[in-house]
Length: 370
Image 1 (cartoon, rainbow, N blue to C red):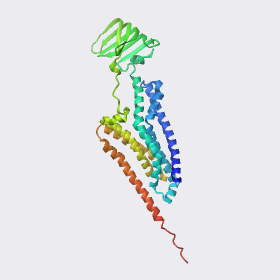
Image 2 (image 1 turned 90 degrees about the vertical axis):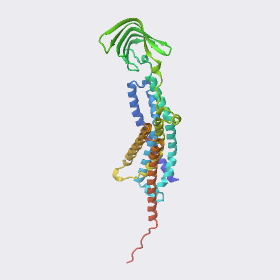
Image 3 (image 1 turned 135 degrees about the vertical axis):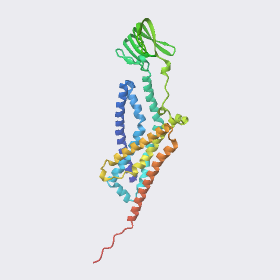
Image 4 (image 1 turned 30 degrees about the horizontal axis):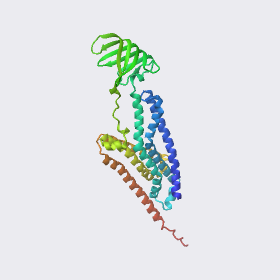
């Protein structure tokens, strides 16, 4: 059918172009952010592209939702502007007649968004978090670069070595400055080597001295040693921290049922429901006002998406803090927007229908005889 095929073809072109543009913008933004994290030592520089890929994949549902909304608004606005909508209305097609072709076009995208937000979003977050944690929780000696001062993972030590061996197990000219239990300790040695004792790792220093100064009292103590051991990687410091809700699978969140878990579920299900509402919003509010220019509707689409997206995030925050209930908030937000938009769409549809039926019986008045 010409009505369905023409609408589907134009929206497909608009949707594809929007996805490419938004994906490029998002990748550029997160590339800058990831490079910044790598420069601060939070991400391994060798894994920047991998972290970027996981991050962009996790935000794919948002990109698809916005692209679908923009494609519908742009297509319908163009049809209003070029008077194609007037032709369809005159042929008996009300505004409600566009719902079915829009649903046929959008349902594969809705399915992709649901799969991405329920399954791919937590998986990509988990992979990205694993890469960051593995780099941040590496041993203190793995952080040390010969010839550079390097802070430990806990932030209470500073290491310096002049040179190390090929395997990184021995080092020469070692310097360690630490704050331990109200004491400032400076240790230097000619050489050092790594030894593993049970679950812990020690740095054994040879032929050095240790300067110890208590911050609460004056004076300091100097001692020399032939061999001295320093604990550098304690097993307790390597234990995995509690996983945040956004890296947990949807099944685990449903089984947990705690407030933070329900808040994360609200965001996941909310984005999928919002993609359905955006189709109706785009259809109901795509009429062009010549006074606001060609891009007015696209600006409206952006502001509408931002407002709706922020409401979903607000619900996540409130449900996570137990100040709002999961079902009441989501039914009130998504159900309310669906009801209002559907009502407005029905009013516009029947107004067009009444207008067409009112014009149909009209006939030309007979010419007046002279």
